[in-house]
Image 1: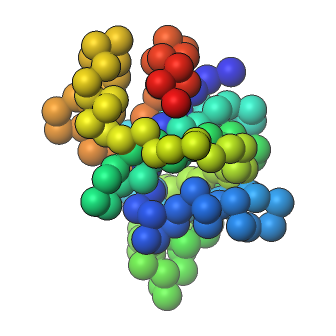
Image 2 (image 1 turned 45 degrees about the vertical axis):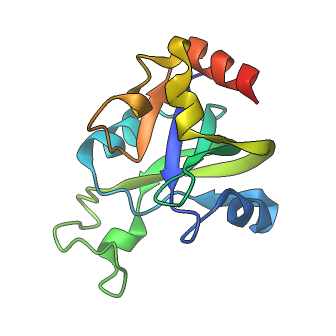
Amino acid sequence: MAYWLMKSEPDTFSLEDLRSRPNSTEHWDGVRNYQARNMMRDQMKCGDKVFFYHSSCPVPGIAGIAKVVKEAYPDASAQNPESRYYDPKATAHDPRWFMVNVKFERKFKRLLPLAELKAAPALGSMALLKKGNRLSIMAVSKDEWQQILAMV
C-alpha cells in the first residue's frame, strides 16, 4: 500500500462533498499536470490511502482520509469541449489525461493546518512543505503518514 496527498479547493470540491456522493465515492478528474498524472496513472493502486487536503482557502490543511477504489482510467472531461478541463489534443486513442476514483474514509476531528505541518520537524522533507511544490497530488512516505496521524 502507498500513501498520497491530494489537494482540492473546498469551495470546488471538499471532503464533505466526497462524503455526500453516492457510496461516498467520486472520480478525481481535471488533473492537468504531467507529473501528477503519471503518479495517478502509474503508481496509484486500489487500497492506497489518501490525505484529503483543502487548498487555496483561508486555512489550508488536511481535512481527512480517503482511499483509492478504482485505478487510473481516461479522464473523459479532457475530450468534452464543454468541460473546463477540455484538451483538444486528448483523443480516445491517446487519452493523455487520467483519473482515479476515491472513497471517503474519515474526517479528522479538526483540520490539520498547513502551519502546524510546517512546524513539525519530522515532516521537514515532506513534498507538500517544499518551497515551490504546487502539485495537486504527491506521494507521502509511511513515516510522514504515521507522523500526521499522530498529530490529529
